[in-house]
Image (cartoon, rainbow, N blue to C red; front, top):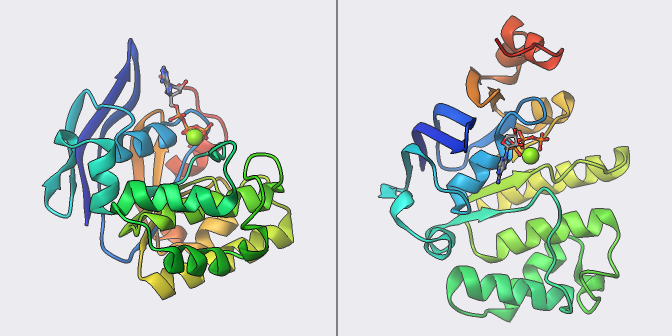
Length: 237
Ligand SMILES: Nc1ncnc2c1ncn2[C@@H]1O[C@H](COP(=O)(O)OP(=O)(O)OP(=O)(O)O)[C@@H](O)[C@H]1O
Ligand SMILES: [Mg+2]
């Protein structure tokens, strides 16, 4: 479904992502991990269309998406959440979803929005101001809900579990698993917690200083000496 070929992203003299190649098949749940500043969010930005790579190709369902707009990528089925929740101010929770749905699908289907609100436990909050009246876990759920509203084939989730307490995290993980089963959506999720990633994902990709240093099952990846070294503070040569 998604294929990255030799993707490189530079900001001036800084190479944030360096010749990364990886594939995500339909319906796969893959973790993207790596230390702070490894290039994870930048890679999401390149896939969703916020950042233009300096080199390489990004192919989604046989379409070379580098030639297409942010908007076109959403319509192709690439949905994403943001590391820092970005509710649309002055709008209610429900209105946030309606706008996202219109953006991503070109039409408004209120019944579908209600289904998503219900699924993410936000039905009671539908009329709340999204920017001022939600707790952190609800803001995170809204991020996922907005990404779902575009009817995605692939969800890019950027640290949606970060900052949640243990029970909140467990509930959120159950919700993601259920979402994957119910809607049959592929998920690429950035998350720092190794236990969470191991429970959720069948495969894990590891970035370190912009380079893909491992790609395999959680067991393989988290026992790889190079990965362990990257997590314990390797200095870049
Ligand atoms: N728009 C930008 N302009 C310049 N440098 C940037 C920009 N966006 C990201 N960077 C740099 O690129 C590198 C990768 O950043 P990125 O946010 O992708 O890391 P990350 O893996 O998501 O880290 P974290 O786990 O802290 O979220 C960092 O050195 C960051 O400072
Ligand atoms: Mg990040």
